[in-house]
Image 1 (cartoon, helix red, strand yellow):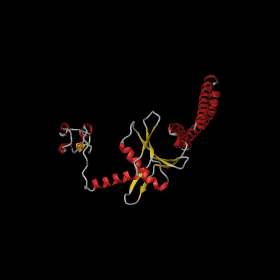
Image 2 (cartoon, protein in one colour; image 1 turned 45 degrees about the vertical axis):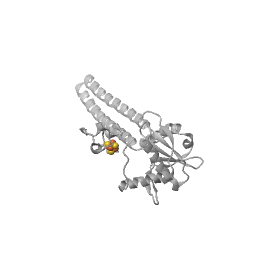
Image 3 (tube, rainbow, N blue to C red; image 1 turned 90 degrees about the horizontal axis):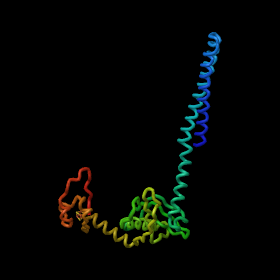
Image 4 (tube, protein in one colour; image 1 turned 60 degrees about the vertical axis):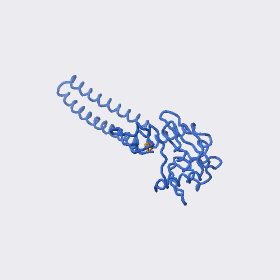
Length: 251
Ligand code: SF4
């Protein structure tokens, strides 16, 4: 891309110089020579200038086309490679050693656990360490992690069990624009704990269990059920108009 740009610039500059020279010669010829000679010279100069101008225009158009084509095809892979290389160097430096020295084996795939309690878990990245262990990594674009992140990562670990030996911990990769990614190591829930959550989820879904209210002013103030919810703080029970803001469901 850079080479093509430089070449195109040189060609365009030469073309402009040639056109300007031709026009200058034409003007000078008309100003200095006798009228008949000037007319003949002027015609010759005009033809020559026309030819030069036409060649220059063709050269400029070809250069621009080459530049556009070059930008559209070749550089994309180069730029991608550069971006990947930058990404790799920044990312590897931020990673914990065990995964930085390991290999990426799964990226953005949905894994399925079959059996009595089937589940689907979408992974971000899974690394295989030098010792052959699988480590799940989940990316979140925020500063802090939540309990739900650990449940999510634990489901991935459970679904990964068919692919090899999985560690009992994983990493939540917290990403904030302009900062180095922060890898937080978290202890994962065991398979039996995930099974208990699975049972609870199904019971709630089939209305065989009642949800436990967890009132919190910031949460209840936007909840669609707050009007009739006895657990909601009193000040939150009367809905207020929230133009343009959909009510969030709770608890
Ligand atoms: S249902 Fe809504 S209002 Fe009631 S406790 Fe949960 S979040 Fe608060």
